[in-house]
Length: 147
Ligand SMILES: [Zn+2]
View (cartoon, rainbow, N blue to C red):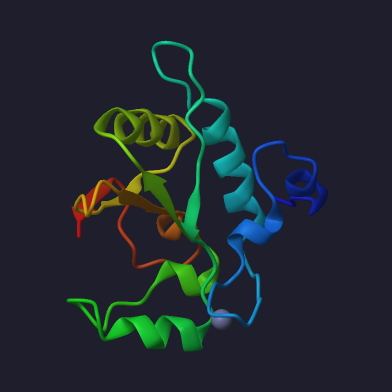
């Protein structure tokens, strides 16, 4: 599938810069097909009162240096990150209801891989990636893990 760069630039939901590496390098190799899926998910992110639940991106693309710098904090330092391939995002979650709405919207848009973080000081995040949808992937589809 060919996805035009402009689909994101025209999106009312996201700015492309929200997905750039946050180490300060400014590199942004977020996958355009992935962005299209996220835009489609965001359109569905509405709670039962009709309130829109935004997708606040806390991490999108990560350069290798950035990934290396945060690796040591993780329990599984040898696992590869879909963030470095531009195939993953972390989305901020403020309440348990927001978590349900966002997760449901991502699933409806066709994503099947999720990581749910613990609630720390009233905030947590949902990781999602499309690592299972790329060729020769070793990432399983249909999984939810925790952090
Ligand atoms: Zn970087």
